[in-house]
Amino acid sequence: MTHLFLFTDTLSEGYVILVTGLTIVFGGLLLLTLFFKYGLPVMLYIYKIISKGRDKKIKEISPKVNEQFTGEMAAAISAAIHMYLNAQHDNENAVLTIKQARKLYSPWSSKIYSAYGNRL
Image 1 (tube, rainbow, N blue to C red):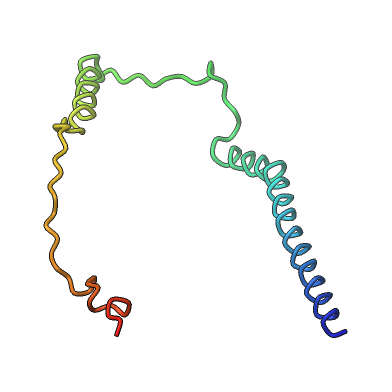
Image 2 (tube, helix red, strand yellow; image 1 turned 180 degrees about the vertical axis):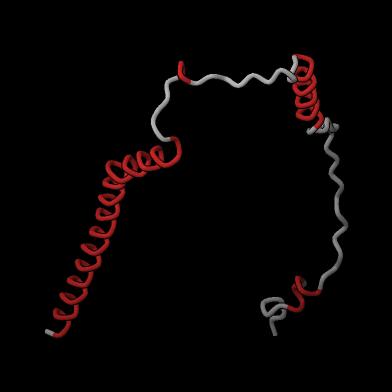
């Protein structure tokens, strides 16, 4: 009779763990869904209000022209970036040399010192 009680107690404990785990997982998924559906758009809207003010259309934005920035300067900058990106990686020889390492004697791996090596 006591054996049946222990089995029922273990079974009910398993159900408690199952229900608790499922509640945590699906509750977390529900919270993430609500956050991405409602919370994130509200946060983005508030960020847009704080950072930019009202929305501007592309026609309303006038580019600031710098008369001192010439095409030669743009070419020099782009050439420097190109040289930097190409010089960043060295072209090395693709030959792989493998040398066999000399194995030194180690008493730690010797069978004569192990418990199974010396049978008396």
